[in-house]
Amino acid sequence: MQFCEECGSMMHGQGDEMVCSSCGATQTKDADRASEFVSTEAQSDDELIETEEGADFEGKPTADDVTCEECGHGKAWYTIKQTGAADEPPTRFFKCQECGYRWREYS
Image (tube, rainbow, N blue to C red):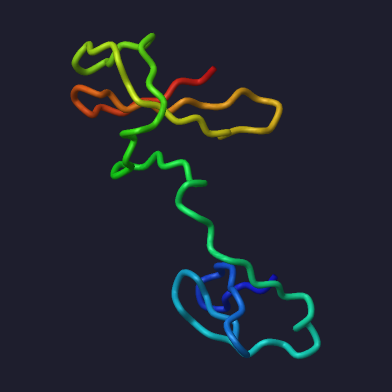
């Protein structure tokens, strides 16, 4: 694994160079360590769990046992994400189907 000297982000191999995924800086691959680097294909969007402001929750599982704190509606889309250690329960992220308000619930 090689990290960018400019910003510290992880770099990926592209031809004979290592390219920073964040800032785009390039570095020449170290010939002695070239066999250590592995390039992988990009992660597909269907494996991602979107929890940020612009996330599209529509089509995700629906919870009808919750109440929106903003409008009082009783249905919300949700996703589940492991935000703590593996031995801790996951966190559910909700988006109200009525007003779009977002909140989280720790199990």
